[in-house]
Length: 592
Image (tube, rainbow, N blue to C red; front, side):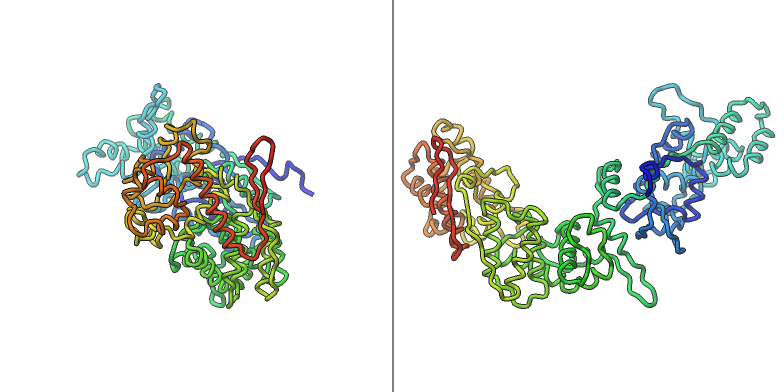
């Protein structure tokens, strides 16, 4: 058994030793590392830190027997592992520094920089500056395009080209490889004095290159899930390493003569490109967890017992390949169910993200889905007073529940419980399960615009229109402020919210209902309001141009009643308990 000291081991290597080991393919960079953003001044700043013997921060290396997909090259230098090693060393943190060091000394090619030569040179004539904001390193470290005078035609570089020919600007790599020749050229020129500042700087940069050591932290005996956490915590870009990145790297397979290639990221991206609507843009982790549920159910002895990182890490290429064809069909049916049966035009309305997994499993290899049952399932769990799909234990219970219907065994829904007070106090600013359920029910009614009554507010293309849907306060906040002592309820309750097009919403502005509803009150407008589950009473107030002082409270209570009736319609055949935990003394009101 490895000790704790073996798991995290600090070490250090000389710059050249590290880079030579990299070129010898002793290190790899996994593909989940982000793209390098190469900046010449950052590269110069890195070398200035080395020149001044400042610490660079540690390179984090993960030693493991797990083979991952890795980058084929870095800065144009091939580093991909080709032989049959049993242990691999992956650079988890330090790719940017590694690229800068490697290309500065060995040259190479920088992505997106054309024919730019990243080899770095050192100008021996540049003196140190005393200012705190020392920028001398930008003049001391140079790239060839800052030296080349293009045959004497580019005047800004002519002085540097002259110094280069005199041996006073030298290639960093040559200082180590051919120090004697460089020193001799300077000595034979005008700088025979051993202690001349130019020769002192030459010896200083040589000593730096020979003696500067890069700190390493080596991780060994670390599980993939732990690697994800470590990567997230040390990653300076603030981008967490998702288990999806690890699975992509582990399941990657290069195309050979006898076997097709496999690249999970590309498969999902191609699926997104070929799929219409907004659900295709689900995050990568959700796609992976849907696959994990399907592998658990439909791949014999999969050993993928859950959708947590611990088990996602164990998914194998052949398992994904086995479920993938039916999984794509299942997801298309799922997206169609949300968008065209429930009329929910985007993933932001789905109350539980686990619905993608439970319903994805139900649609898998299912040629005869029961949509009436699925609608009942969706609304039952979206509005139930208790969170019944918030952990993985419940997830598998749901998968089993849906599997019964799939095999012609009609599952039984328990009594449904809903608290009117939770509807009453649901917040406009919340993005919780019940808030999304309320907005889903409003979207399900296919609400019509008040100004253009033949237009649905939520259309298939509403995400990309200029006139996008807005969530409109039926009773605006300024009206409530004017009557704050008359109404107990908050105008930010979702019971005071309706979908309207952006233009209609702007036209209404902060007017109160008895003012703006008159503008839209034409024949059939009562039916338009019913698509928003808006009670008729507010329209009656508009028609007589008078509202009770506590009109918001009255309106919300009436609208809660409409919501309850609509939910009852969705759950016909299921026993329903309606409670109201609104405090009135210490009593709790209940009705069935």
